[in-house]
Image (tube, rainbow, N blue to C red; front, side, top):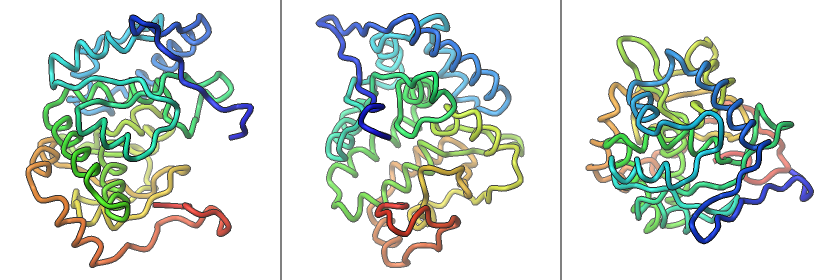
Length: 270
């Protein structure tokens, strides 16, 4: 994305209020309405329950404090306003303190369908409902604590665990696939693709297997890992995840299930 198109987070005033304009309110409305229709019958029950608790407004962009009142009362989490991009130290530090980073900018109309950077809609609509769930919140908190103390090399393995759970996680309910990952829940294209397409590969949830699986951020995911229950995330948070990182490192990476984007580009996948 060129410099001219770079998004900049809106700064809240001294009372924490963010001044969203009428155009942004309309974009929020259109994004939410479209995605509510898309996730109907596809989102997991835990997400729908959280969405009901949040009570997101349709006619305007919500304020962070409205979200935080619900998060604090359910799991003790809160959202924190951050610039469009933050480094990994800051990211893990926030999660370790039960603070979820939210970039306070909203995509423009011309990028309505897809935006590579996580915007306010992705963070709030995609993730915050699940943060009202105890199991999901506990796992995310543990992930933040481990990531903050981990080496740069180990963080890459942890990043894959986050990607295939918090961002692109599925679970099985009554023999049907349901979505809990925010990267899917905030994308109509990925919502359709993840649960109704015959293209992806679905594998049972296995943390070591996940950590060995490369991914690309700019394509539909060729593989998803499926929980039997959201409680598996809580159980994982009680286990020695860093020993799983060591095991994944010793076993080595799986072959990527996608073509390289460009051999000249460093950081093609993780």
